[in-house]
Image (cartoon, rainbow, N blue to C red):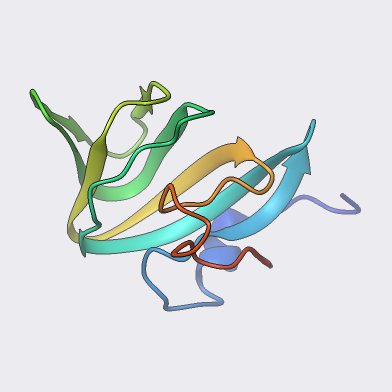
Length: 117
């Protein structure tokens, strides 16, 4: 990185939902921001945990046995192999950290393309 990444400025550059944007890389991990609204689909990541940090809004992470509600400043990690579904109550901004190349949908065929901002 040549300069700090301002997350609010990066989030202001796009309107797509459930389409993470890479703002930096760290030890072969993508640090990403995303805008969410409404439900995503049920999925799991076989090889990696799924890290969520809510920047603004309220995000429910539905698991098959419970729902975890995240507010701004809260973090939750879904363990690898656990089926889950993010559901955003209104517009939600999040920060994600995932190994580079991890499909956001759990399936490379349906994953959003990685975009650097």
